[in-house]
Length: 483
Image 1 (spheres, one colour):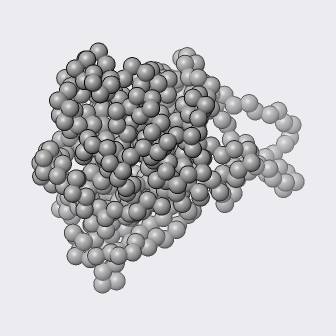
Image 2 (cartoon, rainbow, N blue to C red):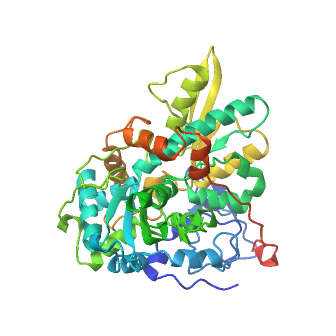
Image 3 (tube, one colour):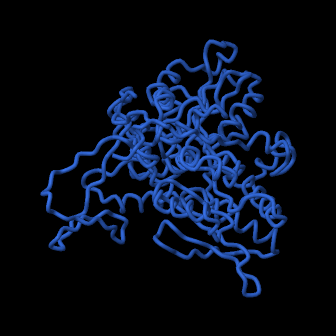
């Protein structure tokens, strides 16, 4: 076993998201010496914090062990040494190098240079807008300007790709539900957009839980398909001659982009070549002595059209993690039970990150959906599924408490800022994008007709926009024992 040392300090400081994935982290934690006669009890308070109670009844909150990738012993419990090498290949330094060597518009025939395309997630855009005090729209236009000045050919919004991910998820759920009614097919269906959750499921719950997970690719990987498969045909160039970078709210997206499932053997390229976080974008701006306010706004690009036009931003209802629960719920209610749901009403259960939605007919619950954010809620639900006690048909699963807007790669609050207030500002900015009714974008319909077999859920769409998962063997090393 070796310690991972190939991460720059600024990156390892922001890798808290990986500490959530520990199966059995074996890094020894300092233990304070105490009297042999002392008796202590450990309890969990209402907020989920561990509290130490001594003989007198006095209590104190215990500190959480902080594990970064520089601390990791590569025991395969969470992040392996092979994965660490993959992640190290994806940083703002790699993106900067690609931009410096990018193909210019008159150099399309020069195969020694690549076109650089940058795709920005709406969560990252909201984080950067909050950091620099801009509206969502102004942040989008200045980010476009910044990356184009550095050499990017196009800067896209991944919300467009999320349309495809949501549409495919809707169809997959209805099919699974109908098959389940015939005693085939696994329910609940578990959302697949969060790579931190997927990594945890593959490494911790193995083959048992994988059949429950949706096979639909995340918006990041759908965007990779749109860029490397669809847009490359527009340019009549090889997908390997496009360098595709994404801006994402968490470090786990680097692992997702590095999966072998998203490597194109024939073209010898990945759907997403490089992932950098919101925080790394801020670092790139700082290295150039800039803030977003210093960048002149630029018209927004459209993946459907290669001509620059100052288009509008769009959003989806259902919260900062993409609205999977809400869109699948509405579609299922309509397709399975003929009910149009105008307002989705959430009921908070154990905590604000565990909520559920139900559809009743004739006094009977016919659909029961849940959102489970953060590993405390995820672990509770996994145990219920394993025991056959889960009451849900669909669960929107996200590794981060509060979801993607609170991802580990988002810009951290300054010392003078209250984290909850910063998150609230990011949420407000994210929601300021007008909500687009799913399936109404003519560009999406055209791409389905032209490239994806005609409609969501088609055989061709499944072959392109869906993926698979792999149970990973647990290490049998004696060092995986609890200390």
